[in-house]
Each structure stands twice: as structure tokens, then as C-alpha cells.
Length: 457
Image (cartoon, rainbow, N blue to C red):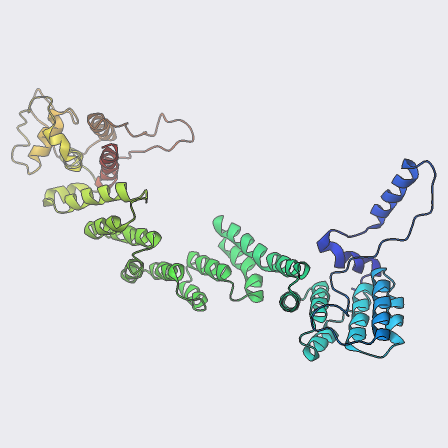
């Protein structure tokens, strides 16, 4: 659909805030009529500021004689006034040149009767250093919706003529068609809408396939969509810097190859993000010795280092304890004796704490967990049947017993008790204990307490 000359003028000036509409003109005239004592005829409209330069200025302009320059100048002034017919007529009477050809094509843009993208491409092919022709091609292509041509012509024109106006226009087009789309895709990705993120990225990558930000984000989106092969193909065009190598580890994880991912992450010992990703794998594999070493390698100012190292050391200590301790920590249905083992072995300092008499419990004396049970009972962490001198070690631990033992341990360690679900303040996180109680769940709570104790010290 062809636009009127007025629409074309508004289109070509919209990026500089000079679009003139009929409503705006009427408002100005009314203001003058009612704001001044006597009315006078309005003067001529000021010349429009077009989004391309005159044909006889800038780098690569053709050599013109005096008469040709006068004709081009007369045509350009007519064009800025919106009189495209007068602009064409001004140059039609002179000797033809690339400048007169460009002015005629510019008049077609302003008139909106034709869109001379093909003719302008031919002109820039034959006059490859003619900056004004490139900048005009950018405007014509933009009007036609040819983003790739418009952007590349704008960049080429700004390279030839690095004046602020043309540099700004080039950057504005790039931001609108590439940068803004990447920002939109990133917002979709952050919201978990990966399909929309991928869709938003495609036109940006079509215009700038080497955009590092777009390629990196596309790889992240494809990993989230469980398409690691496509993510790897996307990354192949980028140099293997730290972030790209780290993403390669993410791709290996997405494929389920944790060994490869661990090797990739540990190949970046100076990158804390990669080290922490390697730590997560080591912890997931119960490789606490590796986790300790990785935490040790982190810079001192990393907030994850202190608590992570204490937790890894405690987990490693537990991992080399006797079999009955391992069974307690992995038990799917925790018994009372296993609860005692977890509470005491996770916080070895409680074994030497004073308080209470050592109870006589006839049903625990032959158990390997006897010492932990006696310590937990002596310190009041788990109750026993004092009348029958029995502990009932094989009875399943209840949720109330777990909460009671953990609260007691927090008191002994001079720490705040966990926030249990049930009477919590709305909106604040809480810990829920569901029966049957599992060893991994309780050990995670207790180890977190022990880690906090290390921080307090």
C-alpha cells in the first residue's frame, strides 16, 4: 500500500521527533489566533528534516560543476518543503549525475508513490563509497519493512560518514531490531516461557547472527527446552571463552553426562560460577572430598565458601563413619535409634556437653548406636521410658519427636530453632515434617543447623 506524501514525510522524520500532523498544525494556528490581539496569515512551514542527507554532501559524493550544484541545491530545498515535483524538475534540466539520480530516488521516497530500494541498491553497487546513497537506501528499506537491508545500509553509511547523526540512527535501528528483541527474549526466558523466548530471538539472530548476547541466550533457551544438540550447534559459532565453556558443561548436564560436565566445570578453576556448578555435581554424587576441595578453591570473598566448606566437611566426616550411621542418614523410615544417631553424629560437640545423668536403658546396650542414644537421652533430646528403663529404639520416629529433638539441639547450640509449618506467619518459608519421617530429610535439617553453628563461631 502506497502512502501519501504527508504520510511519507511523517515516517521519515519520526525518529527525530519532528513529525508534523494536521491536528498539531491546527492547534498551533488556533493558539496564535486566540493568543494574539490581531490575526495574521501564517507563514510558510519550515523545511522538513529528512532522515537522509542531500545528494551533494558527505564522503563519496560526485564531483559536480557549479550549475549542477545549484540544481541539486534547488531540488533539495524543494524536497525538504515537500514539493517532490519541483525537486524532480530542478534536476531534470541539468546534466545527469549520480547526485541527480539520488535526488530523484529520494523524491520517490518522500512522495510515497514508489519505493526505490532496488534502484538504490544498484546505485550503491556502482558507487560503493557514496555515503548519502547508503543512508538513503536505509530509509527506503525501512519504509518497505526490509530490516536486513535497512540495518546493513545504515551501518555502511555510518562507517563511511561517521557523523553523530548517522551513527545514532544506525545504533537506534540496531537497538530496535536486535537489542530490544534480545531484551524481550530474555524477559520471556526469565519468566520460563522458553518457546516465546526462542521466537523473539530468531529475527534478531537473522539480522546479526554473530550477536554474542543472542547466541548465548539461544543456547540457554535450548538447554531449558531439553534440546542440547541444537544448543551445542548454536554455540559453535562463538569463541570458546569462559562463559561458552561453562555453557558446554550445562549442555553435558542436559544430556545426563555428569562426568563430562564435571570435567568441563573443573577446567575453569578461576571461574567461581563453574566451580559452584562442579560443587553441585559433587554434592549430588555424595563426593564430599571433591566438594571440600572445590569449596577451598573459591575466593575468600565468595559468600558460598564458608558455609559450603563446613557442610562438605561435615558430610565427608559422616561418609566415613560406621555402617549403622550411613543407614540412619539414608533410612526411608527413620527409627528412634536412627534419629539419635543423626542428631548426635551431625553435631559431635554435643557428646562432650555436660548435663543430665547417663540413663540405664536395657534395650540399647547391645546396639551399635548405644552411645548416640545415651547422649541424646542424657541431654533431653529424645525421651525414654524411665519407669521401664527402655528406649524403644526400633519404633518409628514421629514428627513431634523430630521437632522436639531438633529444637533441643538448636537450644544446645545456641541457635534459633527452625520455623516449622503449622503455626507459621503467612508468606514466610517453613519446614514440614511428614510421616513416615525419612533420614535424608532430617539429616538435611540437622546439618543446616550444624553449618549455622560454624558460622556463629
